[in-house]
Image (cartoon, rainbow, N blue to C red):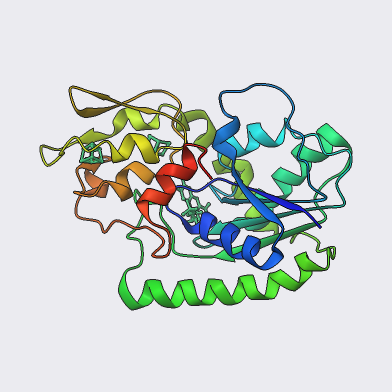
Length: 267
Ligand SMILES: Cc1cc2nc3c(=O)[nH]c(=O)nc-3n(C[C@H](O)[C@H](O)[C@H](O)COP(=O)(O)O)c2cc1C
Ligand code: SF4
Ligand code: SF4
């Protein structure tokens, strides 16, 4: 059975999960959600099994994923699943958001939805785990994906969890996040350590960074994925005082180069 997995990923967690699922399913293609950003119209996958893998942002979906899902056309598919990666909580509300968007458009929702706990990358609020703590979290996430895989392989149904507190949080904080996200990067700054390498512009899934005189300048289509801050090779990007001195994070199995080329649609 042919499978296509659409992914969105800032620091590699969701891409690592998408790749692992794809390897096991075999006849499977990985497509970045960002590759549809500049081409309007319906999105019709040519596969019988369709997956979506993305991070949870404030108990909801990255804005780009929510917009992409509203364009999905899935008349002939047999199985639709989603996996959200997250640092702590909010997977249920994010999956329900996705389910509702797709249902509204197509009349059918997700057949299965899963949450996978991974290292958190929201650098404005906390330090991402490092060293052994990071590796243990990634090993536990791998085991979670191993449990999910047979369900997806057999196209089994799996209902989405309904935690009341998570839903309340989504109702309160996600609208706050959504209304501010796009202009968020206007608050980012670059230090003299910048070497003008251009990595930040290439890893940005939203094409939100332009180099002017060799230095990054941020526009108004930010997803707050934090990739530019985490992946700058010389840690020259700060998002205010809170990010200063905090460790940068990238999934260890996903190189910066892979994130660059996948975000640019070169899968
Ligand atoms: C803007 C933003 C908001 C986030 N909100 C949540 C959240 O509500 N709950 C959570 O558990 N993790 C949250 N996280 C952490 C990410 O969901 C988590 O680290 C994810 O695996 C990152 O995936 P990626 O590496 O594919 O970008 C947030 C991260 C960012 C950047
Ligand atoms: S990734 Fe860092 S060093 Fe490279 S251009 Fe961007 S800010 Fe400068
Ligand atoms: S500007 Fe930075 S935080 Fe915003 S979408 Fe691009 S890489 Fe992500």
